[in-house]
Length: 155
Image (cartoon, rainbow, N blue to C red):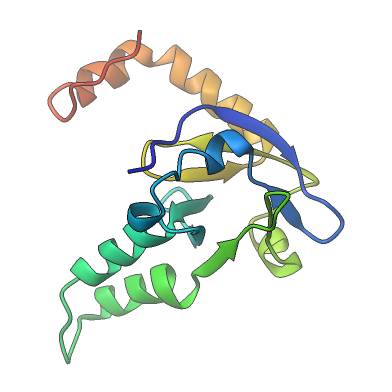
């Protein structure tokens, strides 16, 4: 299974393409498990999230289906599936966003791609710097609250 980490400052070209770094693409080494593309969705934090194709399809298939879903499930499905976009990269690693996506996400000509274990997030550089500073300032509190949930701690 792919494992995403690190941060990458990347330009969006004139055709609104983001170059997925080789280091990230190489994490998706098992095409049978990961697929050969990403699904782009809007995440809980309103940032663009990139999930490997096959794990995203698995998560989607695990959602229980019902003939009469609740309004909350319908809204979630619209967010996670109707507004999702499959992104494949070309031989140079470029994956097309769209002008519409760039505008909706309020992205500039430079973005930061950050690893989040099972997915990647796309941030505006200035917002990412502010977020990193908040994380650093609250490191102890974050680790204490997360300790019951996870075994991973920052070094």
